[in-house]
Length: 172
Image (cartoon, rainbow, N blue to C red; front, side, top):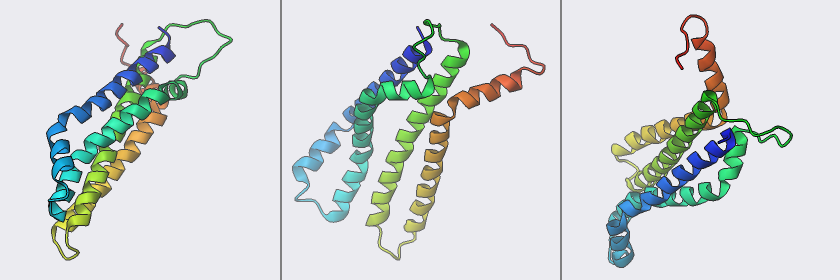
């Protein structure tokens, strides 16, 4: 397999994982859909906060499934004038960092949405509101780290390879 094909396969597997996250919440989704009109506002907000991350994972999986070629091409630029080159260890490492970055992005983004929903349900004078603000900031930092992992995966692998060169021999 070429590096681009490995990247496409990994991104498709991650997309399937994201879609499957919706299946962990069928009871909460059904309760919300059936009883949302009878629920009080704060109970409804808690249900939305509980099911929204799974829905965001599902939507992220659908988007990732259809944008996999774009992500794979951003990690490994296809070169039509070259023959098919087999993927190297560095290629697999770059894909692993990109997949980890996408997973971290999806989990952090869903946390931000969940925390914002909870943050909005607290009264303005509540003590717990400041705790959610800290959680939102931490999740935003995770999003920044995930973007770096996605976009800088080749640079990370090159840095690891550089650190390994001076005295530690690579094992094959």
